[in-house]
Length: 235
Image 1 (tube, helix red, strand yellow):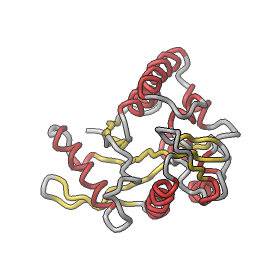
Image 2 (spheres, rainbow, N blue to C red; image 1 turned 120 degrees about the vertical axis):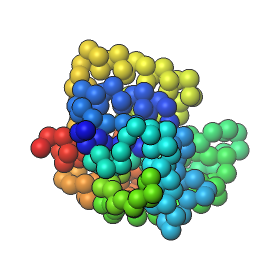
Image 3 (cartoon, rainbow, N blue to C red; image 1 turned 180 degrees about the horizontal axis):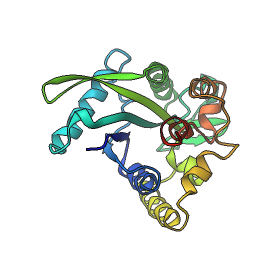
Image 4 (spheres, one colour; image 1 turned 90 degrees about the vertical axis):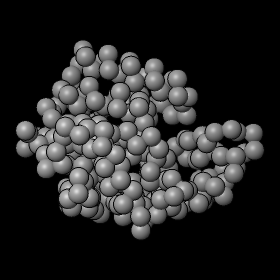
């Protein structure tokens, strides 16, 4: 069997938006939906994040018993930045808002302290994961040291693909369906977006992570997923 890439994504609309587009780029891949932002989850720390990711990979193989961990080529995790690297001056408290609201120059939230705590946790984890090249996993009673990369959509997937933020789940689902239809008529659409100079503007994977940590860049429409194509598809 050919080696496959395993994409780890946060939600169903991430898979719905990306899976069809990726089918036009590579032949062998699978998606696993974590169903949470594991990098900002209250249970996640720098010390346990690798184990939590390994657990998710284990969940994938428990559902896909016919697949062999030996056939994994890369683990690719896709995450939202959610403005996590901004300092407290960008966080605005407003008791009238129900859900966090993200803009280029601020995050509006019901309780600023909660965002500050989340940002500290998530930013530390992302800094750590972006330095990793391998993830250790125990799969089917055998130890693996799997090749790994994490890429960001800033401040979330819909922001990058559609220039829209602060959407309801229903709106995200509608956009994911529409994106699939657009890709059907334009197989290169994902590349056109993520390689646009205003979105993809670093010179290396490492530099892209350094860039997103500066000032309010993690609130802007940026994405480094293009490095997946440069490193592993266009070779």
